[in-house]
Amino acid sequence: GERNLTLLLDGYDEYPEELRDSGLIAGILNRQVLPCCGLVVSSRPHASQNLRKEATARVNIMGFTEIERQHYIEQELEGKPQKITELKQYLDKQPTINSLCYVPFNMVILLYLFK
Image (cartoon, rainbow, N blue to C red; front, side, top):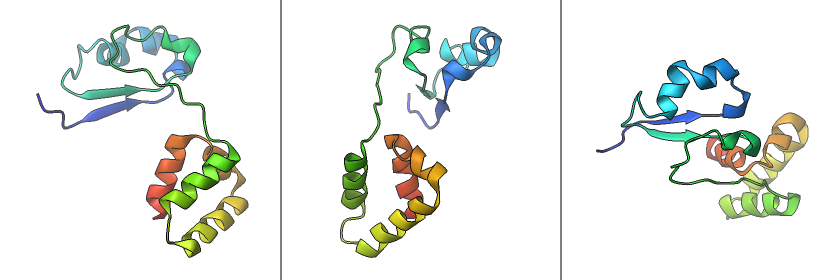
């Protein structure tokens, strides 16, 4: 059927073991709870072997280099040089947020909010 809701279980490997092995999280992962929902699970590679073997896709996110990150910003804010400058100045002043932007998903969210 049509999926109107997608659940995101972020940092699966950081969940307490008892939470991963039983209860609501296990029910969601085994598709016994909310089986009609889409499901995205993020985890470090060492814990991903415990996830469902019949996953429809596995993605390994490596992260941006400094050059790739700058290229992505320029591509997404093409034709908006003032916005590019504003974002660069903001990231220079916010080292924590700046460091998070090497992860592509985080950069997508930041640019979505920044636009």
